[in-house]
Length: 235
Length: 255
Image (cartoon, rainbow over all chains, first blue to last red; front, side, top):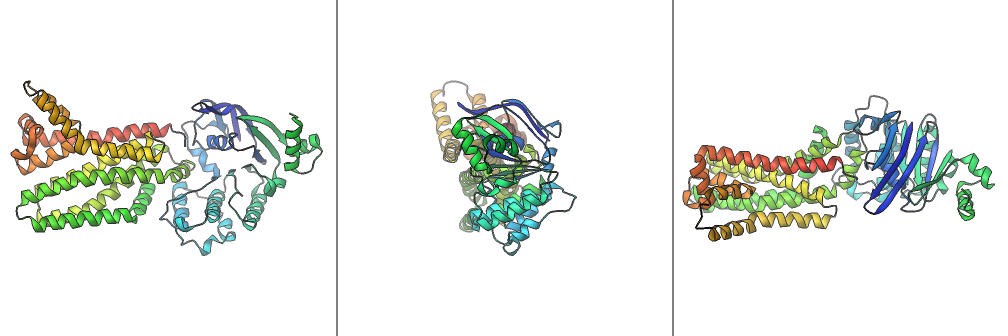
């Protein structure tokens, strides 16, 4: 589904990504983990054409993303911090995205209702709390039934109840989708993952399936397993 | 693209700054027209107002608006929309919203008090000045990643074009008074959209005395009609070139 070959990117002197090779397939739920400033968000932004690589190639469904935007019809993206036009109401924002997506299938508005956004949809974006804004972002990411879901720190601003709703939603839709979740604290979405990618200082330190990870470490929780690997310095 | 532009327009038209801008323009133009008896005098006062406030508001407001829409632009880029469409829609939305408030604030009183060609040219000039400075604002905001720097740059551009430039031209004129400098002077004035706008209107109201040096040369060289056409074309370039440059940068920009 998504294939990255030799992606390198630097911002001025700082190296953000160096020689990243990655292949992600349908049906996987991949956790992108790493300390702050290790290049997680930069990597994600490459999928969405928000950042251009200095070197290397990105293929989505076998087609290069350079100069093409139609592949984004298949991606649902939830940004780390979503900010929207202040004077627009929730429903106007949703209508706007709807009108630029030209989606003919059946829209998935489950999150819109289960987050309770339907009762506050008249509210202006600037009056919303960070968590509610995140709920809007999540709704938009899932709305068009995309085959790839990219969630950048999805639970960071959400309360435990909303995180749980999001979690259940991910479980519901994860068949025949590729789901990429970036996070530095994984506790809530731990047991959803099928793969773990650990990034450090612009490199992918390891890319393992969860069962491999457990096998190597003898742990049964992703967060503990990663902790153990890091401590031991195992590759 | 149309949809994004119309969303931007409806967003801006509800912005308080724009409402105040419209109101201030309206108050000024209505009071100028009711205080001045002579039409040319009123046009002149209004021209000075247009050449001072319109560029300032256009460039600063557009700049701030683009910086504040940073995350919104990111959202749009993550959607299946071409970057060129996003940037063009932003320009179209910003400039049409500013033009609408200009038309409400100044266009309406002008149509009421000085209908005819002069009024039309004054309004058209105001619209072009708005477009030029919105276009420059887009270039400023893409050149400077930092908001404070971008706004600083746009204030400098505004100051330079409205005040400093004239001073420099005057200085050069005195320095080279012994040489035939008419033609270079025309080129020099073409390099400043505000001078161009002034020439456009003054050529129309036929106040040769007030045309100033460059304006007089302009008229002598091109005659009134050609002068109008040439300055209008130059203004168009002032709109298109900064916007085109900003678009080119935006297409390759990391967000």
